[in-house]
View (cartoon, rainbow, N blue to C red):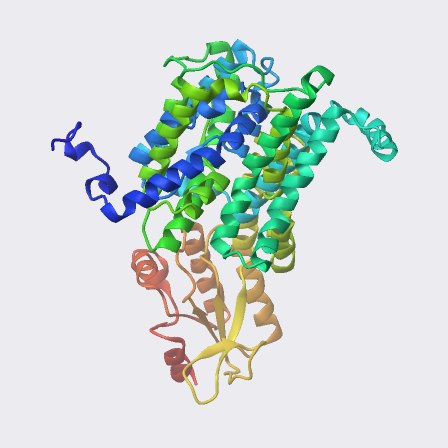
Length: 564
């Protein structure tokens, strides 16, 4: 049977599709379509877009990523981070859900997709490493807190922070508005479902996999019951906000290029959104690949995400990303290949075409509760505690990023995080660990004299510098060397053990020449030991090599024996 497209254009997984996986992919795709439906509506709402936009970008963009990306089970669609970033960037430029706002969202998706595709073509997947894990965790936590705050209006009926005291008084008096009653009920139900129901079901004998499936099905049931309560109690007439009418059918494909006046406002947010999307998508894909003993291509992942955002720009108009919860649903439902995501997209299209009016009475309080519970799961103070115990500089990066996001905005927060990561890198490189070495008795191994009982040579100083030598850390090296010589005036040999030095820049080479000359004037020989090949190749072409007043030893032990 001939293929509708040339076989060479088909993705590798489809050309070699394992037939036993077909049933698993079909079932997983249908399950995810049903369970991710309220989430798709909720994230569109979070982004300030009409709720149906979340359904639209769950269709063609998902197809695009499944065709181009390299992960077998990663699922792309509307996600919390891109949604809150979209709202934060566009709310000052246009009224949410207005035609101008929708056009700006499509433009933001277009720019983000173009940057991702360009990064893939230039093979810039390594740029995802610009964000250290503490910075990423701080960014996600700060963003999650912003998401929770942004949904207070829908769940509790609190439009402004000034309304909080009145809300607390009403809560204490048991006189909550219908919106708050419904929102708090949904929030408590979803929190209990996430944290208690699974363990309770397993205690009653449910297998873990079946219990997990029930837990993932419950949000759909909770939203359905909330919708039924709105209809039966005519709560819309009592102030409970609902989704409203949703037109049946899919939106037409339309190309929206940002106006020049707005392009400047969107360029930096699009760049940050692309970088955050790269980090999240690659990290998720690689983690899943390790679990399944597969491999992914970072640049293919970036390309897949970029193409998905380009498609979202012309079909739905909402930036998309690799969804953590959506991917978790996909995996737990038994997906084995990207065909599952294609089935999910097809099922979403069928729902939009045939059942869109059924969503009209969905209460925003229930959707807001869905977002809040998902956001709470992203708040990760445990990572801050771990960083604080292990490395205070990383903890400072975490706090700086989270604080920047909360008090200055998402763009400023991520910029602070990147800056703090680079500052931490410079600080560490500029203050290298320098150890005075001695030989372990009866062996050829050398260790720090402050940590081990070792043999030393009084006339010889063995120093190991645990960092590449560059212009930023030479002062620390010279200071340590001067201190050691001052404390031990009998030293006549200095051996630099260079086993941890991967690079010596021009400034460092010239400084070593100065050190060699100064030591020679004091009657002290400078020796080098355990030089790595690439470093030695460079030094042989430098003025240091012919001027060295000592020797070059293959190992520290050889130097020890020669100088003993």
